[in-house]
Image 1 (cartoon, one colour):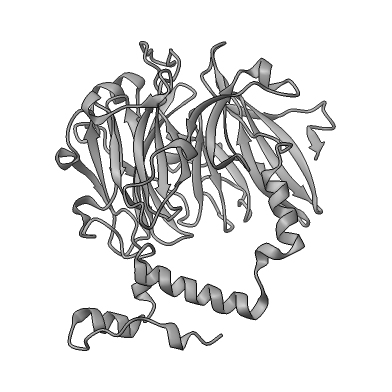
Image 2 (cartoon, one colour):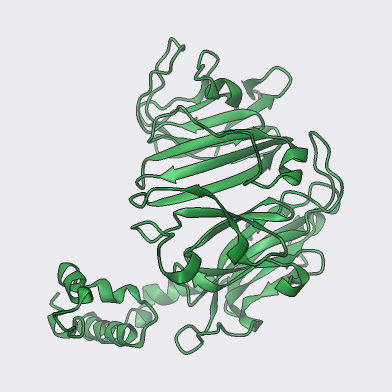
Length: 425
C-alpha cells in the first residue's frame, strides 16, 4: 500500500541526521513512544481499518479473545524451591487481570480442580511507568531466579529456599524493559537503599545473577549507545556488586560492534557451576567461551577478579550449547564430523558429552541421544532432575521420549517400558 503521504517529517538536508534518514526513511520510527511516531501509527491504522474493517468487530477476533480470557486455560506452572516448601508459580492474564498477575500455589493445591492461588505481584495494581504520557501500563517480560538460597552452600549442593529474583517489566510492551530485584519471601521489591538491584530506565538489557551479591549486566551504559552493537543490543557486559552504583560496575566482556549481541552468564546446574561468554555473531551463529567454577569460588570471587581463564568452546558456529550437570548438550544445525568420533552427527542431532572432554576437543565419547530421520525431527526438550525429555515430531504426531543421566557412570540411558519410552501426545 502507498503510505507516502504520511512518511517522516522533513529534516534540514545539511544535517548528519538527514543523510541517515535518506538511507533509511523509516529510521525515525525507532522512537516507538514518540508523539509524532504514535500519530503516524494512528493514521496508518485508520487507513487500514477504513479499507478492510476493524478486526475487533469480527467474529474470529471475539472468539479468540474469549479463548484467551477464559479461566479454563491450563495454568503452566514452574517450581521455585527444591524441598517441601517449594512453590509453583504462574503468570496469568484474563479479563480481570489484563496486564496480568504473578501468582503461586502449592503442589497439593495445584493438583486439585480449583487451585488456591496467592497473588505475588499484580501488574494492573502497580503505579504506571514514569513516562505515563505514552506508556500507561506494564508488560511482563519475565523473572530470573537467584540460584542460591539464603543458607550455607556446600561443594555439590545449594541449600535453602530461593529468596530473590530479578523482575523485568516493559513500559507499554516495547523491547526495552526495566529491572528490579524482588524478595520472594517478603513478596515485595527490594529498594536500592536496602541494597536491591534496580535498572529503572527502559533499555534492551540483559541481566542475571552470578552470585547473591553480584550480577552480570549488559545495557546502554551512559545512554549514548556506545556500549551497544549495531543491532542495538548489549555489547559490553559488566560485573555489578550489590550495594554499589552502576557507574562503578567493572567491564568483564566486550563483543564486536558488528555482533548482534554479547552476553555473559553463570549458573548452577545439578551441583556444577558453569560460566559462559557468548558472542551472537548473527541470529544463527555464535561463539561460546567457557570456564568451570565451584560453588564456593563463584560466591567468593567476582567475575573481574576470577583468575580461571575462559577458553573458546570448539563447536560449529551454528550449533546451540546447553548443559546438564557436567555434560554439554549440543544441538546441531548442520552435519558435523566430530574429532575423534568415527560417526558423523547429522543435521538436527542432539549430542551430549562431558564438558571437560568437549573443552579438550575430545569427542570420542560423544553420543547422539536424538538423530533425525525422514519424517522425524526434534521439536523441543524439557529437563527434570535426572532426565531430558525429548518432544519428537514423528510424521506429524508428537511423542515424548525419556533419557536418564547417570552421574556416576556419566552415561545416558533411554527409559524403556512405557510404550517403548515414547508417549504419544
